[in-house]
Structures are given as C-alpha cells and as structure tokens.
Image 1 (cartoon, one colour):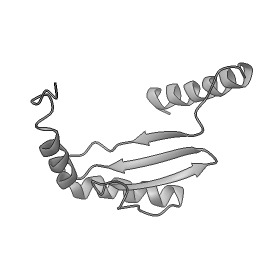
Image 2 (cartoon, rainbow, N blue to C red):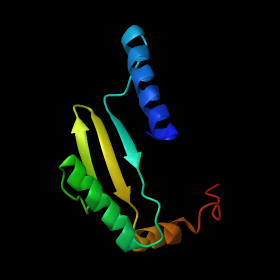
Image 3 (tube, rainbow, N blue to C red):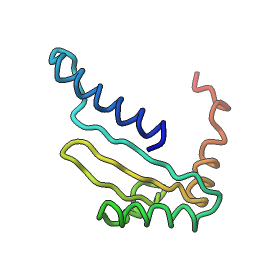
Length: 107
C-alpha cells in the first residue's frame, strides 16, 4: 500500500476516534471524499472513472453538475467516496466563466 493511501486511511481512522471521544465537537451531516483522476485527455479520464465504477459496483453519473462532470460514487451512510473526471469541455466552460473574476468591482 502506498504512503499517501496509508496516511489517508490513518487520518480517517484518527478522525473517527477523535469525533467519538469528543462528542461536544460539532460535525457536518455528511462527508464526501473526492478522487480526481490526473490524465491529459477525456478518454483516459473516463476510462479511470469506468474502472472505479466497476470496482465499487456503481453507475456512471454524467449529469453530476452544471458542467456535466463524469463521475461515480459509493456511499456508506452519510459518508461518500466520489470519483470525478472534469472533462475538457467542462474545464473550458469553467475557465471562460472564471476569466472575468476580479475584473469587476461591484462597489
């Protein structure tokens, strides 16, 4: 098992123990752990999400957001593991919408 995976698992276990032993600390009603594949093209991004979906026994959710991300997930009660591919068209739309950020001062 690689180091970052082991560190994540240990962190989650430690968080669970911490929350169990500190009932006075407020918590959210849900938690999502995201995985974003790191590939240079849409075919490889979709292929990785498809492989994850097969491994966890879930479906592809292509209408995940206004940007139509290619995603799959599995839930454990209020805890979710979600793998999301941000395809080129979605990234281009986001970049275009974000291109004016900071250019307009509403005051």
